[in-house]
Length: 159
Image 1 (cartoon, rainbow, N blue to C red):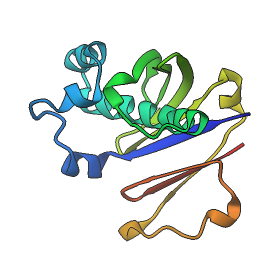
Image 2 (cartoon, rainbow, N blue to C red):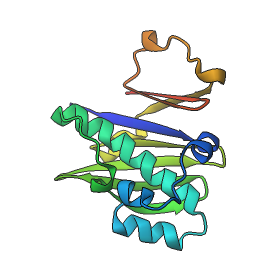
Image 3 (cartoon, helix red, strand yellow):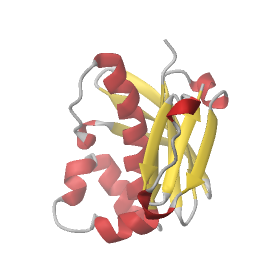
């Protein structure tokens, strides 16, 4: 079975709704290795939400595959393979499973894809749209493989 997941983070909304710098916040969502990378980063805010987005995208696959709906983000371990302005690749380890990720980043949002097969990342069709006031159109009729929305962004992927 071909599975893929996606996640999108509206960085402006995340900045107002989530204070990741408060005591104990990072320990709940990041491993010690990830926390160290965030502390050393020139762009820690972007890195926090990149890790979050990678984990969410991988979790969507893992929960469909296993039927388990327990989300413990600190137990999902991210590894970055490339991190360039605007683009990142890596993988997320969950229990004994590995999911490949590909992310796009800019100053407004971060969008991540995850799959069990690296080659599948190239086949995924992505549709990201903006919506005001959290109102999203009826997209169910387009039969997306995975749906993510946050703030003004809606991300749909198709296989």
